[in-house]
Image 1 (tube, rainbow, N blue to C red):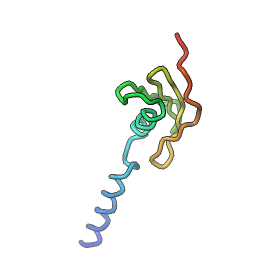
Image 2: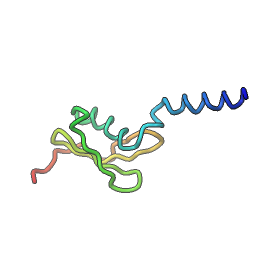
Image 3: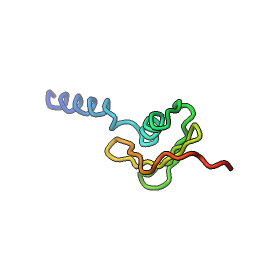
Length: 82
C-alpha cells in the first residue's frame, strides 16, 4: 500500500512538470515567448513526427518536441504575404 502511494505521488509530480503538456501546447507556449505574441494568436500545426510549425503575429518557425520541451528548429521569420 505504501509503495503504491509513493509511486502514485511520483507519477503525479512528474505530470505537474512540463512533461505532461501536449506537444502542441508546449510549442504554443514557446512560440508565445519567441514571437513576443499573445498565446491566442499562435496557431500550431503538426508537420511530421514530433515536428511542428507555429505562426502568429506575422512570424513563423518550426519546432521539434523532445522530452516535454519544444525546441525551435529554424529562425523565426516573417510570414510571407499570400
